[in-house]
Image (cartoon, rainbow, N blue to C red; front, side):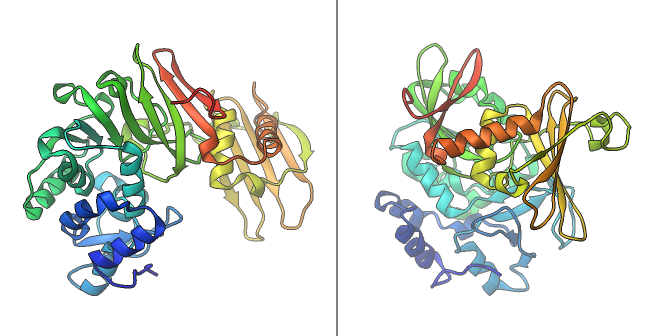
Length: 386
């Protein structure tokens, strides 16, 4: 079911975004000059505002009213599945390109604090709408947008031509490398999530410049980080809000299958058993995943569900050796844990969750990130952040 604005069109979406605080008055002229509908293909899978699932296909040719309602609602729109290999009307396995949720687009642009004349590097052209918004704001001659997928880049170029506005510099390439020929930049914005801030983005940004990107650990959870570039190729800043973007393709996790962790043996293999009072359900929220990922680096999880409503939460280590399983049964007060490998991953998860609770369950804005030649490091608390 598509969430519709009161009026299916730009004015209705503008009203909804203004009422939510996402669209600030200074961005309204740009919103009006660059309609989202000019940057959306005819076939889309509308998303939901508060999650990562997609609704069935909406085809403009067969249901133009539903297409219009989706385009001018505050929802993301999946435009490609499985790196372009998916065909047909059904949802694919993994969304690989989209039109971002308008509310997120404009809050990120507010975080970017971009002004006329700023040189801007965008990573992830997608449909081209964000690049067009930036071009209207600062001048197309000051915007460079890098897209890895040639087909997606071609579509964005077509959308920009249809819009009839001056086009920014469009580059097909690896977004991790930025685009040095167009720098140095005052602002860098990514419309795909990363687990590591590429060093090239910092190198190509002026001292005092700003980088805005969705960032998350392999464990899960994600938030927008706003970094200010300092001297000596360093950057630091805080997280501003929750987000859920597709991962930069070159940073997608590549881990062994489940059976590899058990060494070909049946569960529980050589695992050590105990019980826990912490329900696996308690650690499943987006914020909880984000916090655990910060405090338990090199870990990720999956769920194995059963017909009776019970499930097993599996946690794996990127060391390719450690794993933990926790069995959840509805109504239970204690849960069986099995752990194996050099790390005791459920012990670490419990410690991270207990720390978060003891701190008063702080939100995303409590945390920060510092990035430099020596790596990237989370900051717990906002002291000393840019």
